[in-house]
Image 1 (cartoon, rainbow, N blue to C red):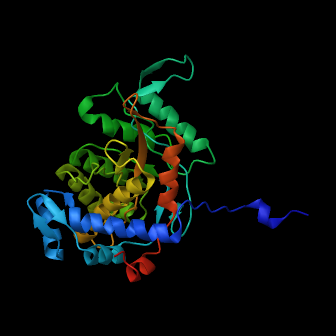
Image 2: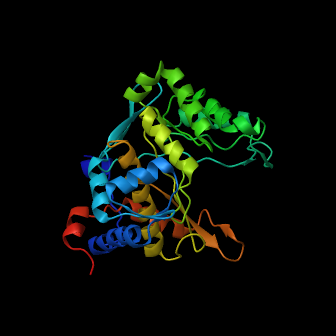
Image 3: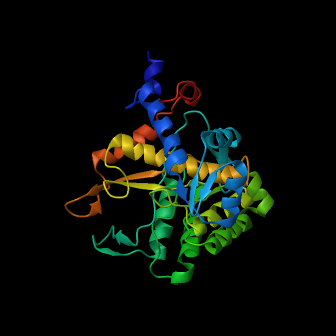
Length: 320
């Protein structure tokens, strides 16, 4: 007789204790309170000032009570749909989903073994393949097309992807116009902006710059996504040993500081906006000056992201 516990096994990997998680959360709050972050976007700065943040030139320092109020207004979970309107990602509790990454200007040709410039056709093939793989739950364009016009390359990236899969799509852009056009394209795919807002299959990927810098263009892209009512995944990226502390604890503290920064700015702009507490990690190889994409050290801070701190308990027992 089959053991039901072995049919769908669940394993929880924790690399940080509850006490360590509390310390990281408190340290992230301290970073935002005492060091703060750089931002000059007029609307965002005004919102921060109104909420009680301390403004000194382009430096904004955020009291913990502002952050914690924004954590209360941020949704604790939400649903992302596929292009046909079916629920696809239940982003609540401890649910996990798998997708593909993006951004590469070069592709390893599967037939010739040649490394060459990424083409529109490569993105079509990647999206079509993902659509047929049962363990892929969402997609990003497989790279950045090099055979399209530079000014519209991100629009072509999205087009190649959305035409070849019905899975949820997370998209890249480099300007607020790109973001707006892509979201309008997505709305056209499902019958209008109201339909996209009701059942979003699109996810935005605005990217603050590590360490602790939120450029005006990134703020604009985040605000446009909030106006369209689509979820967004702020892609702060830690290059540990270069733009971020080399230690696991230091890298995770800086990541959480930037993730909370993104969440706070967005909630001040539009309370209830759907946002991931998210980020990426890379390890800086000091011999080659490149990021070691597949090094085991990269997995450790990613695991730490999934170890949820007990925020309520941490608030009751702050660090001295």
